[in-house]
Length: 145
Length: 180
Image (tube, rainbow over all chains, first blue to last red; front, side, top):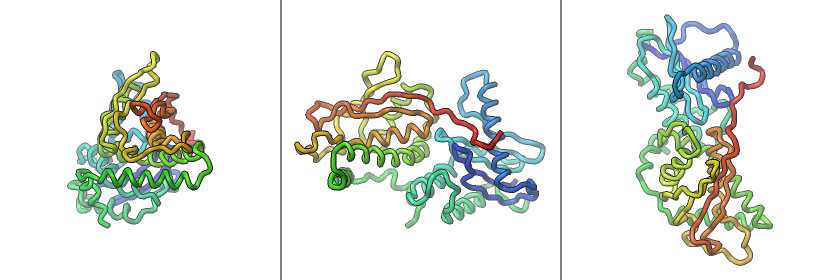
């Protein structure tokens, strides 16, 4: 079990934060392009899911997986989007992502008046807290990567 | 400065008198800095807006309320959860317009004005106008454009304080420019 990487987007598609842990293969394009590609895909899946839903949509789309990785998605009503890629054995991460939002993003970024919202995050404290949070997750294990 | 302790403060009560006096000092200073009441009202609204756009994230993180399905639900969440959480009061939701796009929040008491009397030369001052800005800013972040204003105020001799909220439109999300 392992965590590969994590993206945080805002409602305008700006990538606020990116960090990676056990990512063996890079996309081969610049990070900016990768963020755009990722956001574009999320945007499309989101609108696809809501159009195709036979019932009133509640939480929207939660995750998808391929044969090699699983992408977990969490979106707040304010349009903050958290995306975490893990390997296949990791169970539903909704709560984990929710926790990153409520205890790390809101406390360290939103409540810090010096952090400008809507720009990529420069907070050292946030980066280090996030890193230790992810490393402390029960399914974070470098050995298995 | 342990940031981890932030969660622990949730249960603690903040001294409401200190809060009321701080707000009073803020309004007083604005009255000194600006020539007329309209300008002060505008500044209060602007400050409130800036608070609102951040406060909504804190609200969502703490309350785990999801997206509302209609404006009536929004009204209930604002009155019963948000006001309770941040001001310790529960205004009542009334006076719905027939179209359901406009309602009033009636505040029996307003903690911001506990020690306040409006002097005669500030008859146009909307003392608690910050609240309008907060509501407008917070709702804008959840894709709702609203118009918020005070229609009754105990400071002006009304029996209750009334905040009127009008739904203007849903803010649609667009793909950022440059993407296909």
